Length: 121
Image (cartoon, rainbow, N blue to C red; front, top):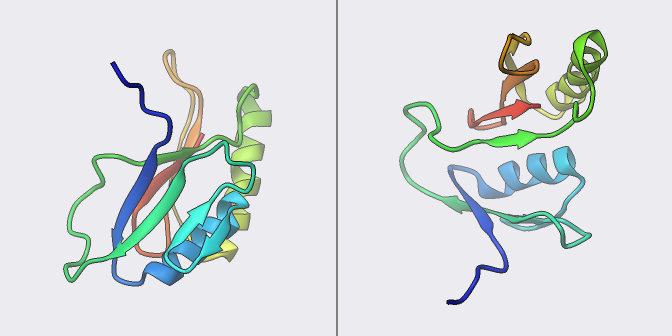
């Protein structure tokens, strides 16, 4: 049985180059027109394809940008807030902070430049 060696995440969007530029800057990836690639080759390639219809409902799949790994409490929230401020300056939108509970650590829900949801985790 063959095993999968690589995964590409594809986003439907109206302006592929704009969305690729945002995610390249957000993740430290290299942009190539309508795609963004991890320069280390570790992370998945992101591809942005133009579609005629706009986004209508919540994403069923989203990216978690792991900025708070290993942090808890106020230290974690501070790291999430700092990254949120950086991404808002790139065009992202802050949606809401979800504080830690018995099962989950704090995370911050955001939207990219075309309204695709993602989390700072």
